[in-house]
Image (cartoon, rainbow, N blue to C red; front, side):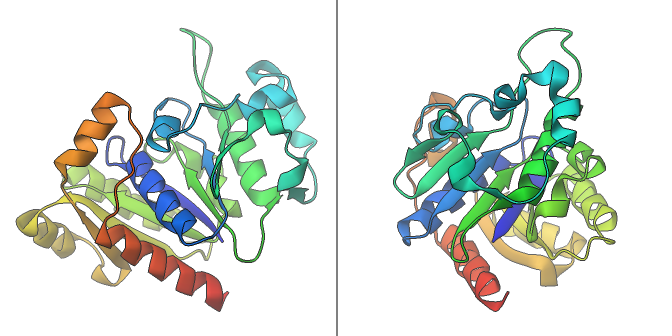
Length: 245
């Protein structure tokens, strides 16, 4: 099952991806984590891994990426991805599509184009999971990155902007016929109730509480080796969804 995680910048997408990947990996499932956020350099640290080489380097780098991406056709097996572009730890594999490094080097459009093609063409096993971490906001939607996923998780924090982006994502993917679910993040009782009142509650699959341990891990750049009941709830939900596909 291919799951795409999106939402407002700073809402906790990478944190949710790392927590969920670790939870599913502990259950004996293979998890391919795809880092398609060109501006966030911390996901590998949260997973306790070294950062892999940018996959866009396999195609000659960002300057020629648009033309190279057009040549990607047909299914792509994971064992066809060169080992240089994957790092592994236990049942989790990490692939980073690409990053922005230098002043004036241009937009992230080629990186999003490669992300879209990769998610659409990569083949994973029937019982395996792919979890993609996207860039902030909705640009990836404009590039069609969601086309290759099976389900979308929108991370929503207690802020008006986060709610508005969550609603916009629902509108933008309405023609894709993909299931979209909300994961509330950094909530307490009062903020959880407030968010529920603004969102379609039938789409809410979990509410991750505010946790100072997560803040400290992220600040220190450490591995996020924390188990949460709400993350287990998301994993249970996704495994049932996968079994019904």
